[in-house]
Image (cartoon, rainbow, N blue to C red):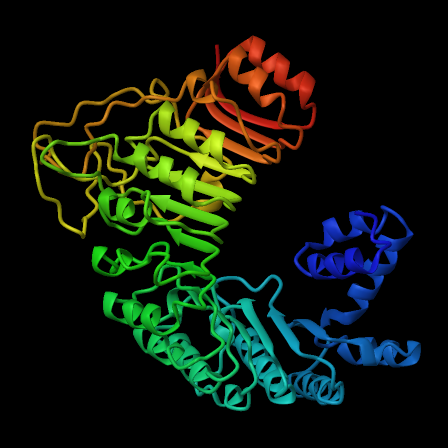
Length: 510
């Protein structure tokens, strides 16, 4: 895409806003059209420290670019040493007053560079004052991003948030926690913007009250409640009220959710859903089977993340149920771009082959057999509880680990022979959370029907790559990251010659 046509220029302008600074600098060197588009996009975003904001605004006014500013990215970290407290506060208030005279700003992103986990009183005081002044100066905001700002900089009274009534997108605090202050402030902010709100990224600060308020938001489409403490009733109420227009639903690490609510996340209730994240939601595998089977067609689903935290339990101990899920995903999710499955003990080569052979748009695939997750069910048991309590392993480590989705997306699981087996001490109590499943990896038979998608960027499979696998993977011209369990030397040399820039992270070389 050279950026010369109007359609390409419009697409590039939207994409640039999601790129980091290093990638943007690389893009502007492509050609003249890209340089112009990147320059225009950078002009629209004023990125500076709050003390330098007056100089930056003066520069924009002198160049005649102030009217094109649409976003403000502000660093509110405390600069110690050269100003007294009174002078510092005066400079901050003057900067906020100048910002209030820039009518085009609709997006505010606040961050505090270098602010450590235990900020001093001066850092907290100056940061709270800066955030408060900025929010009062920009009542016309449509996007508020506080995700890189410590929650300690939130005014406990929340008075500065009362003037924001036109917000469409909210990204809330993710750094630190301050009891229930930030959750209560988010609830008040959502309540005052229900008529315009479209997306909320509140993560652990999403509460049942917030979900009930979102039921009255006519334009609401995207929810990120990762790590929150929401209950089944609240989620069911939201799905019944706004499910027909939801496009993104992130529920990873929501430990209170059970089959009662997860079982209703079907295409019938969520017909436009594009992103579904159920990582570390403790339900049985047959709950996922109710969502993904031959009758459930997901026409718009593009990103799916699942973790079978509890093994499927039935009188027949049907361990091939996960293969059935993958076959259904391959047939009924035609637009899937990213698929990440963790702790899937029942998936075999047949299930993986169904994914690779049917999904033509797939770019990221992560399928891990045994990601050291809490699984339940002793041999012969017929029932399992929806809530699993994590138990310590014999070596003292906890089976229940925090969510590290991004790390697991690039790092394969340990091979079976990487950690020596240690017998538990006689005094250690037996725990039903330990898995009795043997560790096994995929083989080249999973690729015998070929790989339909040629757009793969990332492959992380619990697989032993051999020469047959290398011949199939050589057709993936966009491959950038390859992870696995074992790779033969011949296959490694073939892949290195085909993809000299591909990052291969494989534990053993045979």
